[in-house]
Amino acid sequence: MHETGVTTSAWLSFGGDLRRLPGTWPRASYRALVVRIGFIGVGRMGLPMCQNLVRAGYQVTAGDARAELESMVTGSGARWEGRPAALAAEADVLITMLPGPGAVHDVMAGPGGALAALPPAAVWIDMTSNSPAAGQALATAAGARGIDVLDAPVGGGVQAARTGTLHLFVGGDIALLERHRPLLEVLADPRHIVHVGGHGAGYLVKLLVNLLWFGQAVATAEAFLLARRAGLDLDVLRRALEGSAASSALIRHDLDALLDGDYLASFELDRCCEELAGVLGLARDYQVPHELSAVVERIYQQALSRYGPVGGELLAVALLEEQAGIRLRHGSA
Image (cartoon, rainbow, N blue to C red; front, side, top):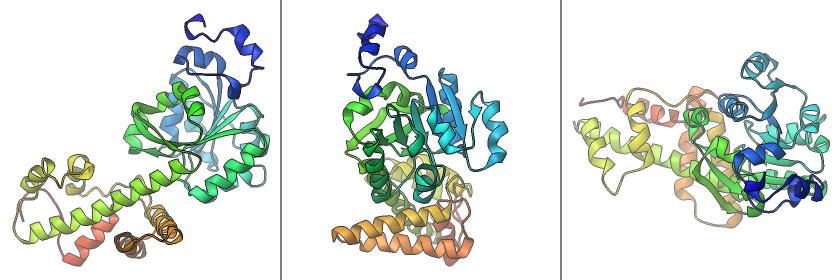
């Protein structure tokens, strides 16, 4: 471990406590110190993230409320533990990747929850798209036990989870982030691990990213419906917009899938609405204008009423297509 400046004797002199270690060190040396990863939430995003940690050499114990996922976890090389407290009790670092605020509260602070079982020297990294208020309350409770916390919600979708190229919006102590960067770089593109502020800031940034993403989807759909009605070739329009001031990641990277009829089923429509409602609540609390945000939220709520809580974060576009009597597809009408 001499290449890091953190020797075994130095590690012991810090009492084996990751919270007290300075600086950052390479992945191999980090793995010598942080071995046991607990991972709760092995759905579409969580399972490939768990697999990447196993491939990187960590001892991963994973669990989920859905017991039927056990075989997939064990098949990836991780150990299964369905009880949050038992899983957390053996973790150097606990990662949660859950559907939303309610699930995080239940897993961490509900009966048999993980928070009370975490060892005092452990670190909790919540990668859920959580609410800032709910996340802050749990971070405060963790701090009272001496547990360090980062909120690090992810962006990038299932494919980025598989390839280890997620975006992370990290809130919390920047020194803690740097200490655990070798772990985070297994899951995310190093260029896109962004420290955005103190506890709760990561959650807020992810909500704002999704607000703008959903808003771009609605605005892009309306523009393309008008173009289709006017007889424009949508592939020609897409190429024109890609290099224009109106370009966006949605136009550059996701519009082709939408024009194939793919409404991105990896994220549920009710979760979209929950996040948008959370943004509107924050806007009201901070007394800032939110008229456009309210329109986007209303359209998504209409889509939820029409299609139900199914996968499809771009189903608001399908709703607008139905209202126009037009399908947005490749080529001209």
